[in-house]
Image 1 (cartoon, one colour):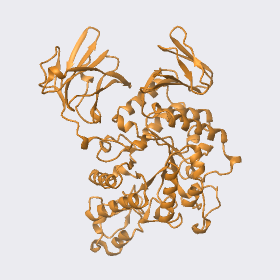
Image 2 (image 1 turned 90 degrees about the vertical axis):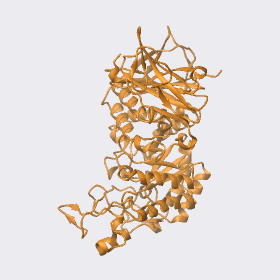
Image 3 (image 1 turned 90 degrees about the horizontal axis):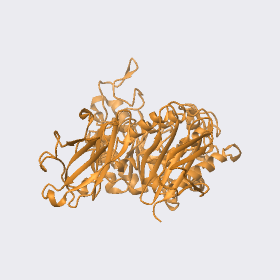
Image 4 (image 1 turned 120 degrees about the horizontal axis):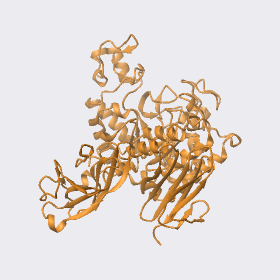
Length: 582
C-alpha cells in the first residue's frame, strides 16, 4: 500500500462532529490501492468495554485519491481511534503519528476526538437544506411603481448597458409573488437594495435606507411579511468590503484628508486621495476608484456595519445575508458578524461570496455556506461537452470532499448569476443540455438557486447582457421550460433524499459523457441516468434488486441477469427510485 498518499488529521473536514452524537471520519488513500478501511474506535478511558469497529465507505474518488468516510457514534461523546487498512493479504494500521504492521496497544499515539461540545457544533439552518432560491436583481425584475423611476429610465426590455436603469422595484416583486409561489421557490436572494447611484447598488451610499427608486423600508417590511406568509424566506446582499466614493464618511476623508474623523475607516496609502497612473492612492474593490475599501479592523467601522446587519434582521425580519466579496474582508470581522446576526436570529442563513476553496470560512464560526462557483464551472463544462464522465465525477468528488457534510447540504449551488453569462447562453442555446444541467442541480447535494428568468429561457452573455429585464409576456416565455423547472422543484421538495441523502457516482467512465449516480437515505433510493450525447443509447448497470420505478410513470423497471438497462434519448435522462421501507 502506498503510504505516502494516506492522509488523515483529527480536525477540519477529516474529523468533525455532524451532530451531538455523531462524528464523521474521513481517510484518504491512493486511488485503487486499498480494498478496505476500518476505523477501530473506543473511549480512551475504557477502551476494552467501549471498543467497536466502523467500516468506512469509499465515498468519493478523484484523479489521484480514494476518499473513505463513515459515522462514529461514541457512547460518551469522545473517541480514540486508529485505522486498519487492507489490500489483498496485506494489513496495515495507521495511528496519529506512524504506521504499524500489527495492532498497537491502545490508546497511546491513537487519533483522538476529545469531546463533542454543543457550543462547537456547526449547524446550518435547517430551512436552508429545504430551500429553493431565486435570485432577483430588483431593477431588472418588474416595475411595480413607475412613479419612483429614476430620471432617464429606459423602456422595459431594452438592451442593457453598464449604467442603464429600467425601473424595477420592490413593489414589482410584491406584485409577482404568486408567480414565484407557483414556480415553487421558497427563498429569495436580492442583490443590493440600499441607497446607491447605480442600478446594481453594489456602490452603497447609505446602508440604513432603501434606495428610493426601489421603495422604502416599510415596503421592504411588507414584502418580507408577504413572502413569509407564502413560506418564502428572504436574504439580502451585504456589501461590507467596500462602499461608494459618495459615501459621506469617505467624502469627509476626501475633503479633510488625514484630519478627517473617518480617515482610518479606509485603507489610505497616501494623502491627498487621488488617482495616480490609473491606481487610486487608497485601497478599493479591484481598481475601481468609485468603490473604496472599508478598514473592517477599525472599531467604529465594525460597530457601524454590524449595526447595519443587526438592524435589517431585527426590524425588517430578513432571514440572512449574502456577503459580497467576502474573501477580502478579515476573518475577525466575520466571526463577530456571525455572533451578532445569529444572536438576533439564530436560524439566519449566511452565504459568502468566495469563488475558490472556502473551508477556512466554513468551520462553524463564520459562514453557513458560500456561492459554489466551482460547482457551476464543472457542471457546465460537462454538460457543455468539455469533459467525459470520468473527469466530471473526479471533479465533483473533489468538491464534495472539500467540506464537511453539513456544509455540503447547504452550499449555495447556482449555474449562473448576475456575474456570469446566462445558463442557456453558456450551453449554446441548447435547451436539452440545459435540462440535463437542471436535473443535476436539483438532484445534487446543496441548496439550489435559479437566476431570475432562466426558467422562461432568458439568454444573455457577460455583464451587462446577463442582466436583461425579466420577460413577463407569456407569449415570449418558454412555457415548456417553465413547466420543467416546476417539475424538478416539486420533485426535490417532496423527497428528502434529494436534499439530505448520500450522493455517489455509480458509473462515470473515461471516453463517454454518460453518467449514473445515486441519492439515498433511510427511506428511498434514487438513481439518476444521464445521456449527455446527441444520439440515443442504452445505459446498463448492475443492480441487486428488481423493484425500481420511474419517477414520471411510476412503472416498475425490471432487471435482467442482475443488470438494469435504461434506454435514453439524445441528451435524455431518467430518474428511478425504490422504497427502502416496505
